[in-house]
Figure 1 (cartoon, rainbow, N blue to C red):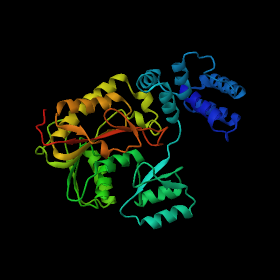
Figure 2 (cartoon, one colour; figure 1 turned 135 degrees about the vertical axis):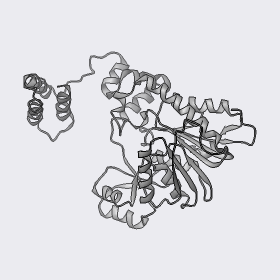
Figure 3 (cartoon, rainbow, N blue to C red; figure 1 turned 180 degrees about the horizontal axis):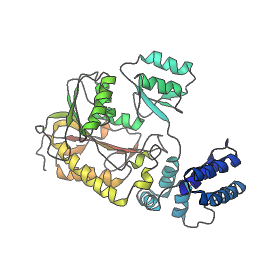
Length: 370
């Protein structure tokens, strides 16, 4: 019955247009619908008291600041402690609170769109939007509405977080180059790479799961990305390419997704500390294999939508220790973003984007000490 109580409390506290009596009645009816009529009295009593004590503060009696923040922001204590240890209390608090706010709607125009006509259509329908201050080709709207949904269905815009768009921009692929996207599904970045190069770069998009490559293929067709070639492979194993083959390599690694809690709130409850170590091991293997196929004087971009240093700075640091010829291409990274020892970050409470880490790596012609 906890789910019913949570739904009822959410209606009472957050949905101001729902009368309290209706919220309580809905919850009691749900109990009967679930054939748990014996709990109806308890649910009724708890929610009626909650309705009477609308000003009750559940954290008023909590002295411990971390436990208090856990209740206030609905985050597990262990996760908050990690963030406080790594980023400080103020950053962790601001991040946790931002995770409970609705994310802005970020999008980009597709090659099928005539930009003037699409933007005019948005204005005519009263959509409030603005050019992204993060992604060079991105746009941001305040909320999702029917016009944006219709444009997305028509293939004229593609919904993609600004930080995700920026990763593809930092890769800096050019016409005529060979590009390898190691973990490509669902294809957001691979198709944007094709767009940014006017379909004049050859993009090899790979993924471990064949069914996810079908999603990439559908998206590529929708956006007219003719030079995206799909390969089903395990990027943690030796890649089926000659070494130093690609001008640009992108590793948008599988991760915990802790930078996307606004969009995926369930992650905070499902995630376990052991998941971070397991993913870190996978990320290291993928990045080390990808580095082998990056050309000298080319560029390798590593990114995740996680805020955990183990998945980001520690993985990049290991690569730099393994490759004596590798260096971070700081000039390729936006100077306005939060800089760490090995790359840059975006934050929901700062840039309004998902929480991303990314870095750009380049290799000299010196011997690579793997």
